[in-house]
Amino acid sequence: MKSFVLAGVAVLALAGCAPPFIEDLNRAAGLTGHMTMVGTVGYISFGNDTNVRFYPTKPTETAIGDVNIQSGFVVSTGASGANDYLRFAYNRDTGKADTSGSQQFTLSGFSSPYPLYQYDVISTTSATGANIVVLNWTTPSSPSYAFYSISLSGAGSLSPGTSGSLSFSSNIPFGVQMMPQPGGTEVFNFGLSVTGIVENEPASANVTTGFAAGTPITLVSTTTTRELYYMNPALAAAYVSYISGGAWLCDRITTSGVQNLSGVSNRIDALLTSGQLLSTQDGTLRLYDTNGNQLFSKPMNGLQYCYEANVGSTPYVFFALPMSLNHGQWVFNVYAIATSSIGDLGK
Image (cartoon, rainbow, N blue to C red; front, side, top):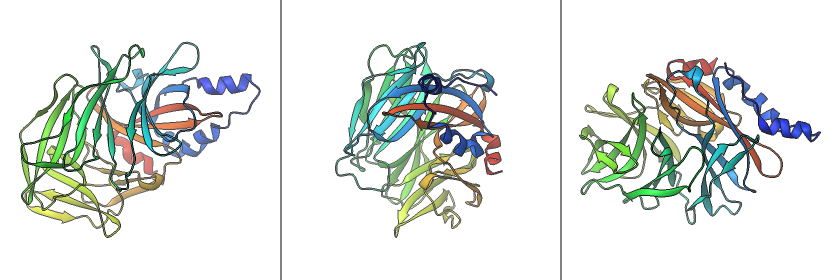
């Protein structure tokens, strides 16, 4: 397992101060002890923002022992709660990190239990560097997307490239999921409301041309409203996670019909390539099998789920641990565990 120097720890030690964020490491150790540490980014400073999230740049290495993440996207909510801010953070040789200028996303008037913005990191490329797509659900019947790219060295600005609305003829997308594919590419699966049925519309993300629609897969459902949607073609099944009567429910959709998974009573945040369902609602990591049976429940203690991505041909689940220093400074540790081993987190 790699070891990485935490620049923030060194700075505080030199200043004669006890590093207050080491406790963050201790609290999360029950989970991170089963993972491989694959990078540290920071420290960075950006004021009094809250709800700080970190999405590491997608790795390009083919073996987990070679992964060394040195940059990523930081999303935070301004102190007033009125806006989200997206920044790119990248390490320098000076023992700290720099950040790009921020992109602002308004939260004004937002009260839905579903995410207003969906931040999906896509593959790192030699041509564009780090890439992220932001999906905007301000108008659920007409969601939009924008791609952002920036050099891994932080050169240039984090600015929107290709953008547009998620439109599939007269069909309305109510949810979208990004899945990793071999070779470092991603597929976006869209749940579409089509007169009492749901179609799955896979699409590949390209920072130049946007979404290229694939072949729809028709699934039986009556879904017509905003929900969280996940699809696993290998299982010929889709899942929707939604609020009903003030509670989170989950349905599995197949060509045979819709089945409510009574064992799932929390928001689903990911459908892994293994077919397992992952939830991080209220800071608790829960894992369910394909039938909705809970496999384990563990407090995350500040750890955050980032995404699932392939390292070579092996899928890994990536997590980040944001650690707050004094005066609005942050350090981010990045961890990964093979998807096939994620059950170990319940031990």
